[in-house]
Image (cartoon, rainbow, N blue to C red; front, side, top):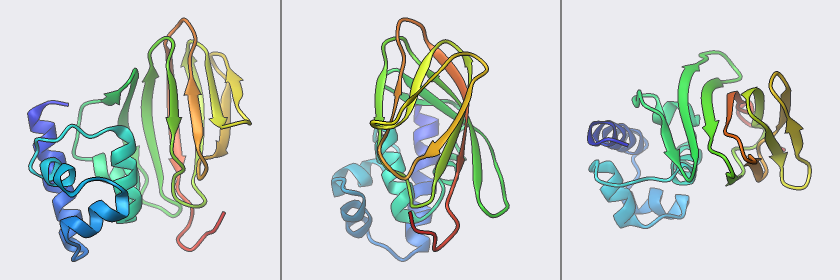
Length: 176
């Protein structure tokens, strides 16, 4: 992520935290990250992982897309890139992303907020995805929807995979 994007993300994250009246320590503890890492991130000098950003969004009780909305370039790590395409404003909240996984990628994603579902349509390549132990193999044109409020994976083989991903968040108060 470039410096301009990091600065923008840091300012947005700080505003979300302060709007809730939370200290750096309280958000860092709740998200399971070091206070110093959160401080660097808010100052625009951190290098957040996708999992860190997801944990912060969950603790702030905002959709992932709301947290990363100010960033106009793909976010990525370990062979995975995601970019927010659009956010719905209705209920339930729906975010749409472009996503690419490099060849030989295995990404373990943490559970999202209760009631969250993901739908993926594979554009190119081959992908295995879904909750750990209950995955589905996709070829171009295939679509799968699965509960994302439990740990799940994205796995490619020798080719990269490109997909459209929608995340539908559970209604406020839903439980799994």
